[in-house]
Amino acid sequence: MEWVALMVWIVIALLAMPVALGALSGAPGLALQAVAAIGGLVFVALFIILDGPLWTGWMAVGLAVLGIVAGLWGAERLLSDDRSVSADLQGIEELEAGILGVQLPLFGVALLCSLCLGVNLVTLA
Image 1 (cartoon, rainbow, N blue to C red):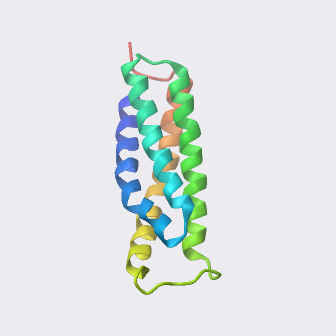
Image 2 (image 1 turned 180 degrees about the vertical axis):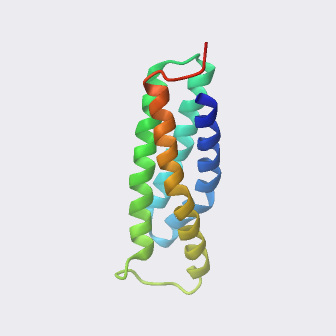
């Protein structure tokens, strides 16, 4: 299960980089989700490297929750009617919203995979 979790976190981290540029358009949640994505990847890698300490799995669970909350906060900011819209950033914001639509369900998958690590449902011998 730890290898599945690692692959999911790698995909999330790769998707997080373009979305993190949303902080430039006034959505700090989009930058925070990138920190959660990279942190989750680091803790799952530490789980594998350190031979399965449970605290690393639970830290990855916490960062998955943070990524979901930050991503929803950023999506709310992108979809808000109360903010000023910049014609220069419209294409970038549309791309960020599309990628975020893919990334948020993956954070849910990472949450479940990391939870399996935290409760010691792993394949490490």
